[in-house]
Every structure is written in structure tokens, then in C-alpha cells.
Length: 311
Image (cartoon, rainbow, N blue to C red; front, side, top):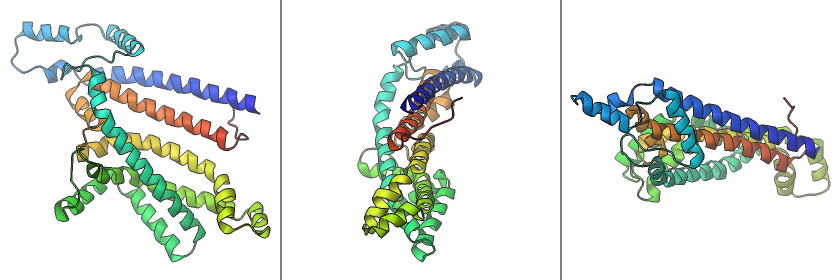
């Protein structure tokens, strides 16, 4: 059993590497199809000789396949290129922005898990009661509300009307509170829904009735037996929502101007800054792929009997 599971995990790892390779190639060629960077970066009215010199300096005069080969060589050696706009190494630009995104991501993840899991348990244990219905109603509202709508509402209420929280920036932990809540809202709603459904599936099982008949306290029955057996679908939705959160961070950071990699990718796309945009998309894809692999390995830790049909 362990050998089959290990083989499957190895195949999933190889598949993840191939997926990342496809993303790298697709991102590179898609950026070139989006428009000529020289048309956006060079000032109008520049003479032809100076314009050609700038194009040569940026490396845009070479054939696309040659540019792609140099790009792959840079990825292997750790050279992410030079920003066409700032004329600085892409790695340095992302090193300045990454801490803000990581902080926002951690805040949102903690809020979603710490609040979502208990609410899901309460909703399952109070099925058919007012508190359970209220929790699920709030969860559905949080899931259905777009991130940018919730962000604008929170800015209007807590920044412009109540003056409790700053509307933008990243200087203090308070600057990350509203963005973290907005980023966590869809994930929190999904955790509540799936935790409730997974718990309802196992609460009526025979082994739980046996545990109660043995005189075990209810918190032991729910926490040790029910929650553990309901953990696999919960882990699944956690992995999927982490991947979705990585995509949503682009919108949230753009609205709140937190100076992270999200709004950096947006401005790079607008300005056709190829190296910055390419690395941002590849970085996001890498996080998504790693999240998927972590879920697969978590399956093995939670229940070694879990098998996925071999392709």
C-alpha cells in the first residue's frame, strides 16, 4: 500500500513540474502577444536611432525563440532578468514587495482557519437551530460577495465614515487588517460550509454511537473521532482555497495599495514590463502547484489508505 501511494505521489510531483513548465512557456509567449513593450516604455517622438539603441539594450531586438532560451537559462541560474521600466533586477524588486504579500497572506489564512473551523463545527452541532442557520447564512453571503465589492464597502464604512482603519498602505499591522479580512472572506465561507457538511456525514456513523455508549465525553467524540475522519475533505478545500487566495491577492492588493506582488503584477501587465510580469505569474503558479502537492502529501499523513487511481 505504501509503495503504491509513494508511486502515485511521485507521479503527482512529476506532473506538477510539467505543469509549471507549461505555465512558464505560456506566460513568456503570451506576454509577447500582448503588445510591443517598446511602444509603452519609450517616449513618443524619440528618433529612430535612439529607439533602436534602447530596443537593443532591452534585448527586444532578438528573435522570440532566442529570448525564450535566454529566459530559461536565467531561470536555471537564478537570474530573473532586468525590469524594462525600473532597470533594476527583477529579484530585487520582488524581494522588496514579497514581505507585504506574505504578511497579508498569513493574516488572511489565520483568520479563515481560526474563525472558519469553529463556526463550521458549531453549525454542524446546531443543525436546524437558529444559530446554525445564521452561521450558514453569513457564510453564503461571504461566499457570494465579490472581493472588490467587500473591499469598497469596508473602506467606506471603517475608513471614511468611522475612521477606525487606514484605507491603504502597508506601514503598520492595522494597514493589513481590512485587506486580510477581504482576502479571507471566501476561504472562510468555504471552510464553514465544508466543515459543516463533512461533520454531518460522520456524526451519524455507528462508531460515534459506540464511542458515546462507552461513556466518552462529547468533546472527545467530536474532536478526536468525528473531526479526524472529517478532516480529508476539509484539507481538500483548504488546499483549493489557498490556491484561490493566491489569485485573489492581485485584486485585493490593487484595491488597498499594500505594495505587494499583486499590484506589482497588475502594473507590470499594464506597462508591458515583460520580466516583472513573467516572474510574477510563474511565482503565483509555483505557489498554486506547491499547494496542490501539499494537499496530496497531507492525504498520506491523515489516512494512508487514501489512493488515487493511477493514470
